[in-house]
Image (cartoon, rainbow, N blue to C red; front, top):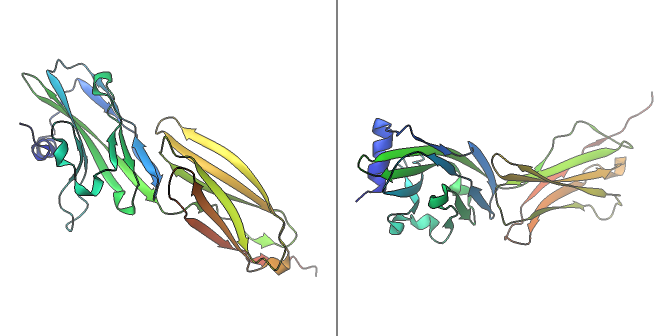
Length: 246
């Protein structure tokens, strides 16, 4: 009987590798709180195994959390850590050399380093493994701008990136100074897909011409989704300067 702890210790202590298999993972992926993240995983196999065991773990964080957490164990499903119960789906197919994993309802605590462990059970057992880092964003990003000058065109780009195959994110601009008119022109910049990691970046560009009376106006870019319960925002307070003639 293989245990995930034995396999992990075997890898860390001895670094055993079959040399006949390579696990292919992106190095780093992004997600957003409340969304999901799919870790795309494939492997090449030239090993004559009897059967294959796949294990996904989140590595130990620090002295406060010294133990690895099991997300998926094809041999012993009951070993799944309680923090991932009902949130993790094995999205791969070992027979087709796919070992992808989907984490739903992502949380800030999901950020960290994950490891996939493949155990090829045969007369001589072979273990292969690979790691990936996951970053969990709490809000979208408004690209930094220089000086904001009254009467000059200002373009602001708000964006968010995630690795979720079935969740469409949108970005909504609002401003909070309704007593003073502000003409806004919003252009959705579409979605950019990184084929190597599966990440999707959604952007929205806000164009406006601020005046001096707009100084102190708060602009807000909010994530919305038809698939997830997400409503996080980033704000920018306009610091409008006058271009005075001397």
